[in-house]
Length: 468
Image (tube, rainbow, N blue to C red; front, top):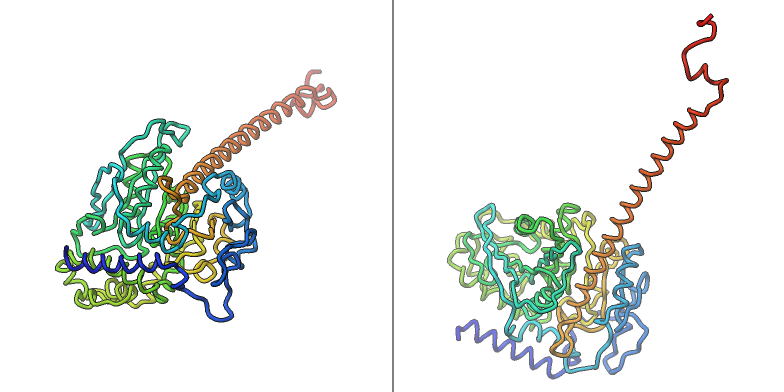
């Protein structure tokens, strides 16, 4: 085993030990004295929860209760009512029996640490970009389950674009989502950034945290291959910064019908600056160093690799890699002006469902990390907040998939039905307007035909004196 692998295995063993000892021995992101706490969460000395309270106090306004202790926070609209009805009917949100997976750290570790096992059959394509860089697209081609349902009424399967986290790891939940989507009639494809998951780094340029330029070219290619198929997008964890940046920059030209973000990192700069609990910080940082260590020679002309691999925090690593470059250095403020995923959020014109957990040990408590005004004011953004689930976990008893996967696919189905009904209503309105316009024109002609003889002089140009 290489030294990097041994260090990673040791760190994962420490994380597992902390989880098995219980998450109450380790409480990251503890709010300061006098700060708000989560009324739906138990106290340190309290084991059982009281039903009826929401996951977070500040979400009491415009919060709709859902099964399983979840809540939907959104701006009231017809689209919100449609999504709310679908979620209230969802069997995935129904509370199940309490299991050993209940703790937030176990939920997170099972997602990130356990081996992926036998996954779906993938067909890889390398897409050459405008600057000669490469990204990878893994099309999920099997196994095809019997009784596979088609999501689109026209017969064409909808394409599901899946974006993993910014660290590039292909997790169990990503593959589980692809398998479930394939069974439900979607055509899943996984987007891999430059240098991630076996995609070669052919040019000394990596993709910044929230730069959607590579994703734009990938979506253009997907639309070229499937021009008539609906396109949905799902992101995981820190990969949500890429998806939200794309939706904000492209606006109504994104070609996306609906999107979902699992445990998104929305306030990214504050997330980097505050730091993660040290086991997660060290784990993610070590994984980043392992991935880039194979490209150390190629990156020497661009960044200070010795300083990069001596980084002790994710912020220092990110700042060295993208800000302190040898060719074009920029400041930390400038970097986030260009990469903040919410910089153009007002331009997004696609329904986005964000699934978050109140006990997320990576993102932190929702009252500190979620921009509540976004969900209260923007009609396209919906927040599904649950009490439990960890970071990108939302696991249930095996062999059931994560309940977040089923909720996402059910919400996409509800969006499809809603938009189809809207188009049908618009078509009926246009036909009705055309019909009424024709009746008004016919009525005008009839009135002219039955006008009295006293008005004939106004209709015709002849006079009686002309015929004498």
